[in-house]
Image (cartoon, rainbow, N blue to C red; front, side, top):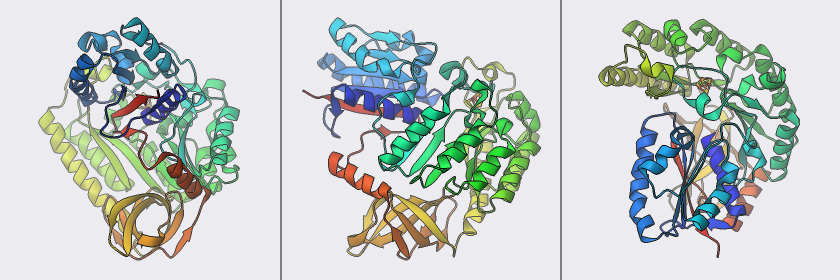
Length: 471
Ligand code: SF4
């Protein structure tokens, strides 16, 4: 969601006359689009701001803006701690950024503007997308759940669903521009429809996207097990271009901890869903998110998580050490877990998941996979170079290509998987087939227009835009 917002911020600023600053040049503006999910994002932001302070002192025309969830959370305190910041804007009003920058310049004063509810759906704003062939489309923003560890609802507000016709219009427009892969996005994507009273709305959106000519791959993230209904599994299985991959947060394998987290499903319900998904789509993969060290987590609770990981056979699990976020109910719960125990459990869980993932990956050795090319890797000799891409079920594949005749990002290759590791697959031989796609055409056209420079320097917790005024 944060990275998608950054695409919107970039699009807005380009429309307002800013241009991308080249790497290692002095930008006229730096925008931090922050995330507040984990504590270290705070430290990163203030560290980055103090790094820029001398530049701001030397050149008052240089501007700094801070947006995103941390801005929404800290509001005025950002300019108290870093008075040289020109603009602070929230998650609900990213569309105001160009005007706020202009006002800060004219009035020579910091501008702080935070709205408590959404002004525009981000998707109605211009965007400069990170990829020419793969795009995110928001179906909803906000969340009606109250997970006790999570700061998102207080920063992104309650769930707001976008009308289905707007979503489909955006999907069709993207496909017309050469996009062949869409990821439908929402904090709780499968609750889509709750706003207008249609529980089947998410399955319908999947089926409707499935009818868009030219759209090869549809993905979505992140669903909540509570709202995961059988009609979504049927829609996934019956719509050929909905990919056989489900990323569904587990968070804990202990019912007691799930209850304390206010996650309104239990371990058996979670395992029941993935069993149904696998029955309907035998070649599907499941990935998840898990938090270790939630307050009150006992050895027994942690063992329940380990057992669930073993049983669920996840392709990947994004594991996090519980991060105490002020303002959330879990922050003041008794029995906070020590860093030492948290690290120990994290290490044990990571080791187990690596073993599980190794086994899951191994099953694909010797199979042919359709890989949508993502990027070059810069490793090459006279004859061969290395590229990577994604299988339909979201596995990363590294493969070799002829240096002189390589496919383009966005094209699709068929490759024989020769080696498995927990985190990626390898296809050592050359692809047996290369299919040029309109996504590849779109990538090629964009590279000609913009050059290979990325428009955005993104990190998981902090996305930074560096821009120059177009004089
Ligand atoms: S469902 Fe996700 S976004 Fe909503 S409160 Fe829970 S963790 Fe946060």
